[in-house]
Length: 147
Image (cartoon, rainbow, N blue to C red; front, side, top):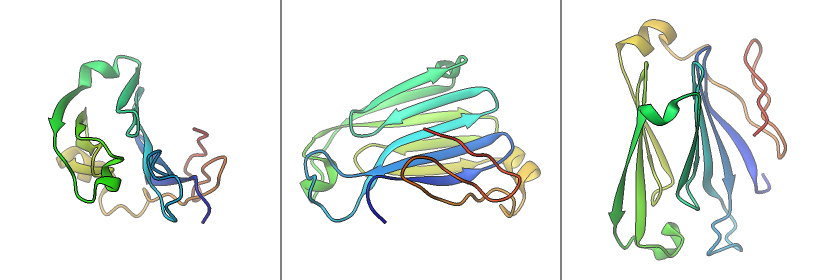
């Protein structure tokens, strides 16, 4: 698939996690991509995290449900960290558990709680599809969201 593309990581009734996969700005000729932007919506709260620029935007009071930690670390290979040694970990707190996003690994780690499993069970109705350069299109009865 050509870069950039958009990926539906999770699609639930009250929780949506989408990502834009693009090239690292320090290595634009790499043949594969890294998560560049992550968008999370939980109920009416929204977080938009740019891993390349290490910035976060909020909607509807979402800034009260997050914290971040700065980390100085040289990552090998250095190209995987986009030639940076300053990195950020974002901790998003939702009613369904915590979601940790790590800029230097371009990684998203969900830590779901009992509320999540009570509502979503075995994930069967929560997995999206991918897939387009311009928009996300999801499986039946889920959402279409344009980033």
